[in-house]
Image 1 (cartoon, rainbow, N blue to C red):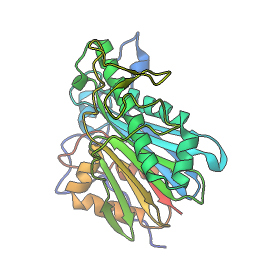
Image 2: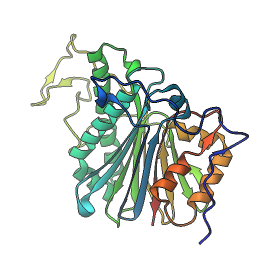
Image 3: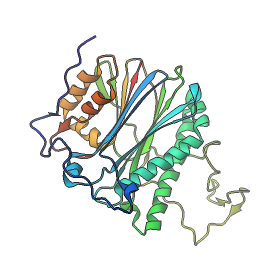
Image 4: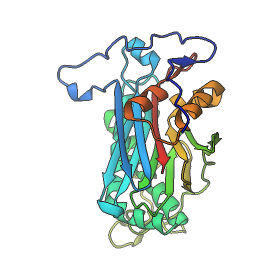
Length: 326
């Protein structure tokens, strides 16, 4: 087994502008301490054939200015044994908006509830390779979660674009016989695969159609193919109400990818804070290749150090989840 090279602080032409360590703590409201966001969240697990590492850390710019982390990370396991399903959800709140961290956390929790309530059916569809059902059902769950975010913006009296977030998720079945890994979400970021020593950018193209509801993923479709609205209980067509505006589509197109992992693969899902320097600075990709091609997943501390390698000109929050295949 090759020796793992030592971690480094930064790559590129020179050190970044900001200090490597946090400078200022975000301003706190003594009557709303639950609104505080930790500088760093770190998590990990091992299920089935895969080992998971996940991290969310405040960017250099936010650390210097004393701003809260706009990225949010949720890792959750639903069910037990081989029927269990692991969800990793990450979101980034809109830049330069006061509630960005709250919007990111809210959308992660909403998609977590939605997936948790449907995890048995989702797991069955993943194991049976029902790609169409998965894509349609997850699209609907994503639309609903983002719709609740827009409703929350309206309740607060702010514009939807001021209380919004990207959302990127990964579903990992605990069944060791199933190597299907499912990505879905809305918004920019990165999905990469390290295979045989080479990084592959496997970010899927955006979807063109929403698709119909899938049994087990929620309620009936809101409209018939002819455009008539349905009541929630009896499915009786009713004319559209002039007092009830139609639900808005997601601001960004839906993305979906279901792929089969091979032994030795490393799958990396991340927000733009890490995806952008990975695409823009080849030295960062090369460094992670040497660190993660030894055959063994890194420990939590080593993974944190690897994902924190800084690049001049990239100072946003970084959130990443990596899956090592046994």
